[in-house]
Image 1 (cartoon, helix red, strand yellow):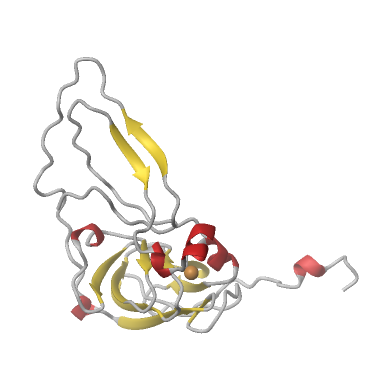
Image 2 (tube, protein in one colour):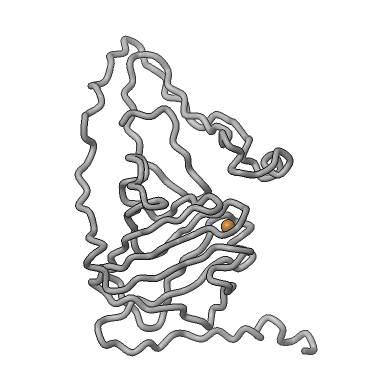
Amino acid sequence: MPLTRVRLSPGERAEIVVAVNGSNTLLRAMPYEDNAGLDRGDAAAFGVQDSFDILELRAGKNPTASAALPASLATIARLDPAAAAAERSFELQWFMINGAQMDMNRIDFSPTVDTTEVWTVRNVDDWPHNFHVHDVQFQIIDIDGSPPPPALAGWKDTVYTPPGVRFRLALRFTEYSDPTYPYMYHCHLLLHEDQGMMGQFLVLEPGQRPTPMTMDMTMTHRGHGG
Ligand SMILES: [Cu+2]
């Protein structure tokens, strides 16, 4: 479905195909039409009203139009939520996920490699968040029970989660298992992740025992008299 705008939250990516027709084409950051649910003052302070040019494609001499956009860009095999080996829930609120802040010495869960999982992510705040997962990309199964729009139906690693909306994601862990070094999942709004809105998981081989790394969290205080 052709679009002239796609909504991206911090860290979120989109692949786009542009047909050029001999004139210049401008890629421009636009304000969030709904101020991302913030009041006007907060929206301005947090940049969601910003508008600026990012990239201009300039037509050369004797330009020729590119081919028309193909009707279908890619075929994506859908992960099967019914085959999920585990289902997990994530509530986003107050710089926390499921009521916990980042702790480098805590592993929240451990998927098994070569399995599919279904994660339900819900922003229960009155403030925008998003959700980013390391190691794998995911597919959005539904948004408040409805199928995702075409622009959100492909592989993603970050999804914008407006207040009160529930997303169900399908993820398949296919490689890079490691009983020691975890992957992270977090809100990708810089202020929020810096405040600890993040957790960790290990991807294990079937039957593998976790041996997570430990971090000495007192280290930075040594040599300062306590
Ligand atoms: Cu956030």
